[in-house]
Image 1 (cartoon, rainbow, N blue to C red):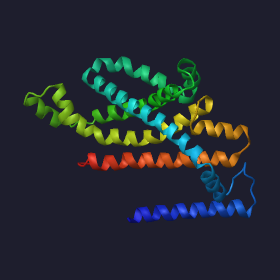
Image 2 (spheres, helix red, strand yellow):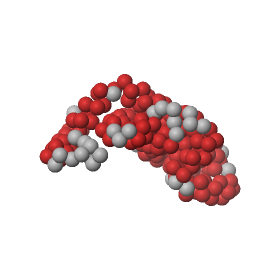
Image 3 (tube, one colour):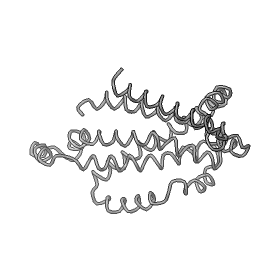
Length: 245
């Protein structure tokens, strides 16, 4: 085990221990801060419900994540190959992203319903813009001297893209994909809280209505585990695929 991992585990233990001591020592009510032991116990007691909801939310996040990554990289690639289109597309993209993602949720729910499709669409919208900006910034980082050398050997725009620009852009694209993992789950859960047929966001909403704040924290705990696992998976893939970094 690396030192960084050891320090991370030590920090987590200290944080959880302090949380437990604070909640127990001050006898804080559940709506303020429940003890971590109560949250873990509630999570275990409702493990079947939380597992089912977690898989539902994760499926929405993964599907939207895949669509958003594909759309973002594709659009960035098209703008690199068609520079005049960049002046038209960029203002429109910035205008759409200037509106908070949550503000689009009621409209998307109205258009697509409260099923999984609306959550996937919202995640794809949030992830797509993040990946689009990362890919575009990465493509713009090409070495001009290397590009001139390739052109001198007859390389065209497509050859430059795959032989020079894409390898240079992949580290930035991967960084955007890591950031988007957390964002995908957040957007899925927030949209579920506004209207859904299942998922962690729906459980959180129902628990708040029923004034069951320990259940709220249990759903948050499951969401945190899923988010960290998703982030770790993308990081692991990045380290093995982008080996030249």
